[in-house]
Length: 124
Image 1 (cartoon, helix red, strand yellow):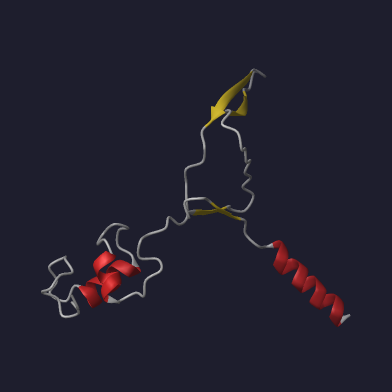
Image 2 (cartoon, helix red, strand yellow):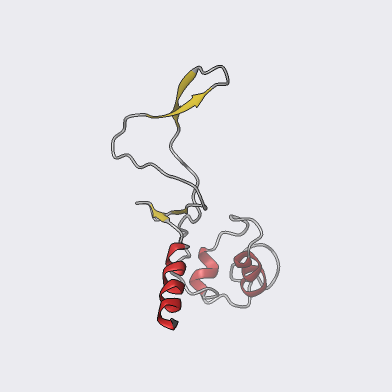
């Protein structure tokens, strides 16, 4: 009985995994629960069907999905807080994030909004 319970637990955890799409440019998109995706390798148009209340049917061109969860940044492979990371990070490029707050506290010691030779951690 305990083996059956362990098997069901393992199977149920696998059934709740998310689908992640990796694009050639390094960006990713994670599908939400119940969301479907159709992939085409051709440049031909894809259509979606719209059924009206009076039973009329319209086919409209489906625009390619442009939404992404993660878009790669130049700082992705750098050690956060290093001189290279502080110099490469673009303040406010992502809005107010944890990285932005870290950059303000750790890199921009003189609070002028720029990482340069006037900051304490400048190595250059």
